[in-house]
Image (tube, rainbow, N blue to C red; front, side, top):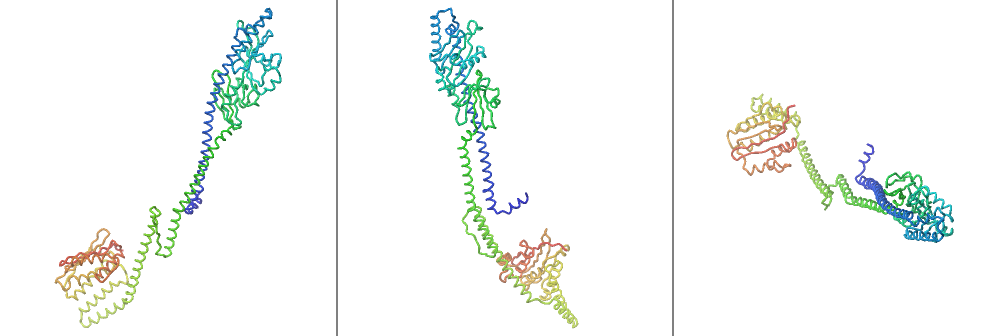
Length: 601
């Protein structure tokens, strides 16, 4: 996992976006398409089941109505008084009376058979007579005894109730050829043992009512939409009474596996996973028949095909849009970023004039403008560094040119001091000795930082020499707390400022001049204040000197010493430290030096 993460981190932004847009998002789209297609299939399946089942319930209701009307007709045949009287006629009546009864009964049957659902009515009496609704009908007991015996056995099993039987072919046809021509046409029959109305224990005969199945089949076919789909009507025992397929065998039990899927409810469905099909069934409270509906799921998949093509087409369009977005991103983002990286590389190789022309106002434009600003700042800083380097080099050369061997200087001054004392020139000898100490502290073996105590000692020696030189026209005072004497400071800070105070402040202008040096610690800042009671400065001069001290480079000869000290302090301690000047004409000058407090070692 960590190795894969490291590999991903090493990929470029372009490669990462290609990975996202070219692999991850298409994979998500593929999964989304599969989920959507599955969801649509499930939704359509539920929708088909709901619609089909409702239609099957409606068909079951229509079949129930047809069945009720048919059974009412069979009851009419049973309860018709003429038919009952004809079935009960005995040989005692004359042939003419029997003929009139036969004629009236047949007329009654013909009247009852005038509905479009009734194909014919046949009644075979126990006394050997037979009645029929049409003279073109054969005497079934004589012309087709085998079929008649099947009907008679079914009637006996019903014990006077209506029994439904189905068969293909018109069993009422007179000729076998006519029956053969119509052998594929299905018919429904109601057969029953006709009992005497007055004495139910007496059997009068068998009635057979033949019904056309067109309206039944039309009702079933109304819910058939695709190849392989069929519907059928089964009775309470599971026997098939009608089937929408012409090849189906009528009167036989439905497939045992299908019968197992039918529970005791009025309606429902079952998914036949082994056959990839749906099995729907519907009935009603007053009917012991069921409408069974078989639907191959392949037909549902075919109806889903246009929706599936639409979904996958939409997902393909999304993928193409993603590719277009990727190419657009490449043009709008990767190209400017690559150009920015190339310019950075060129700038890093030393091409200082490299800049990017941009007119964009977005984040990429901000990056390009920031690059230009950075390049300008870097070039400015490099120029400043080069200028400082050249100044430092010149200063080092000047130092080398003026460098004096300290030991040679000390030995020479000591020799002069010894010779002067031998000839009695003690005052000059003292000056020579002070000068030697002055140089010894100032040079201090090349050290950059010395203690504040050494710095003050160096300043006092300088002031003593100046007192001798200028005839004692001023005095000096040092106010330095003892705890600050051990802190370390940049050397040769005080002497140039004291020199300024003597030359430009008090020399030749006033008598009894005073120079005071004060040291204070304020948090992390060491403040040294050098003040005099000399002639001071005019406001314009004071403003000019403070402006020079704020510049980063030493310019001109005005206040050169102060600029030099200020620059040394800034380089040593930072921009927050340095020199500030306060002065008033005729009242004197105060120069404040701010240094970073460095504790004693």
